[in-house]
Image 1 (cartoon, rainbow, N blue to C red):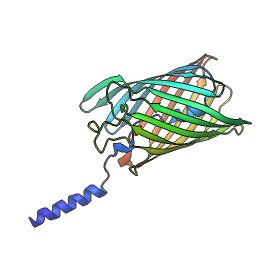
Image 2: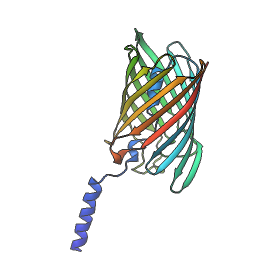
Image 3: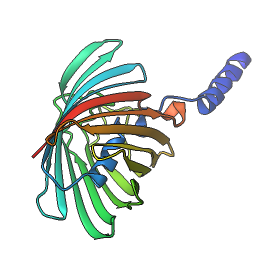
Image 4: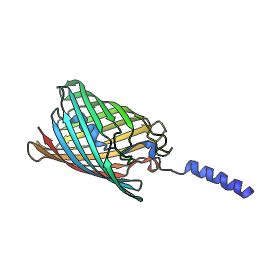
Length: 258
C-alpha cells in the first residue's frame, strides 16, 4: 500500500511536467493566407491550390478553391472552400471542409502605406470533423494590418484576436478543444522583378489556455501570363512540440485574374 501511494504520487508529478500534445492549441491553418489578403491587389481572382500537411500522426491533402471579389474600391471579399482528405492510423476519410469567409477594408493609405481592418469567419459547415484540418466550429477573427513600401520590399504586420464558438463539448476532449487566442503575424514581401515576388514571415498564437504556437512561412509566385499566376508556399511549426497542431505543409496552386 505504501509503494502504491508513492507510485500514484510519481505518476501525478510526471503527468504535470511531461509534455502532452495539446491539440487544444487550435486548428490547422495556412499561415501565409492572412498576409496574402493584406497585400493582395484589389482585383477579381479565382484560385485553386493543392496542399499537403502533416502533424501529430495525421496527414492531410487539401484542395482549396478561393474567389476574391472587390465589392468597393476599399473593400475586398474572399470566399474559400477546402476539400479535405485525412490519413490517420485508423484509415482514410475525406469530405468538404469548413467554408471560410475573409474580408479586408482599407481605412487609410498614403505613399505606399496602408492600414486595413481584416476579418475571417470560419463557418464550421464541413460535413464531418477532420480535426485539426476541419473543426466544425464557428471561428471569428478580427485583425488590424499595416503594410509599407520600401523600394522593392513591403514589410507588414498583423495583430488580432480570434473567438471560437459552437465548440461541441461531446465531440471535443480537453486535449482537442479549440479556444480563444491572440495572434500576430510579421513579415515582408519582396518584388523579384515585374513578374514574381517572394513573401515570408512568422505567425504567433497565444491561447487562453496559455498554450503557444509559432509558424514560419514562405512563398513565391510567378506571372505565367497576364491572366495566370502560379504559386508555391510552405510552412513549418516550431513552437513547443507538446502544443503543435501541425508540423509542416506545402502548397502549390494557380490563380486566374479577371
